[in-house]
Image: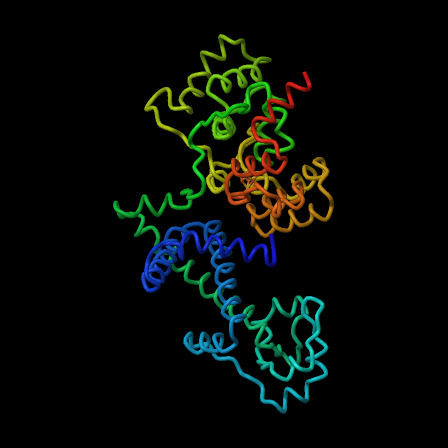
Length: 415
Ligand code: SF4
């Protein structure tokens, strides 16, 4: 998702989770600031968490700053002076001297009109602070300085924000062990990255036509995210799954509507090359009933969300759990995507996100690649794609305009 689509989606999330709360502006702003610092404390402890938090905060910061800049350039100048950020604005005569060079620079393949040029202020900024813009040739460079028009200051300010936040996170990580000792907030901070506030898939809801042991295989390639496809294929190849794989796939299928009885039937069939039905009952059926809250402490276990899978136990040899975007190396992922007939352009886009360690964005990109124009399609809810495997699955089912009813119907027709 990019451009306006991305901005609209982000605005919706901000509205739902912050502005939508019935609090005064002052209270909302306090909540915003407090939640930022709580998350800083929770996400400072490992490099991976710091990187994730940094990326999300920079996206949010940039989005908000672009909004401020779009609404009025004066707002941006106010923001700069309130934040104590000073850039050297070049005088009018220097701007006119450089006119030809400044006008030769284009952004998004659009060159600035003479009218726009006359009303635009330019800032002279050391090139090290403008690397992003230099890389994308969006600024004029001379004698170690980048000449940046007001509209592109957002990149420079975001880079500063990123550097500042990155340093603060590293400092906070040094102090984390002291905070973690606190009995009151230590456990909360340590588990916060695994919390999930999206749609609840813990209920095993069966509607007419829910997937069954007979129909699971029919929806794997078409509607399951890569992690679940790999688990299903691994299960088919090995006729078994190790503990973490059974948990990840079993709970996913529970959230997708597979009943407990059908789950036992499905796994016992898949294990049948290695285990007789009696052996399966003895060794594995308890585990499935446990997942459905029918054994042990009878807890209602939720399917794993993406953060939990990505940050969880990495797969070892013979394991099939985990997230392919996080746990596969670049060449294995590339060849896997090739086998799925994903075009080379989409493959490159997915791999770029993977290399940037934006695993969930890589997954969302995969969804886009195999569900063209999903965003505009009626009845397709993309919220949660890239955050939860079950959201990916249900968005895909609705994209194909085949509710769970149709999975059954399709199989009946084939028979
Ligand atoms: Fe699965 Fe989530 Fe990884 Fe996608 S990002 S492959 S849904 S764990």
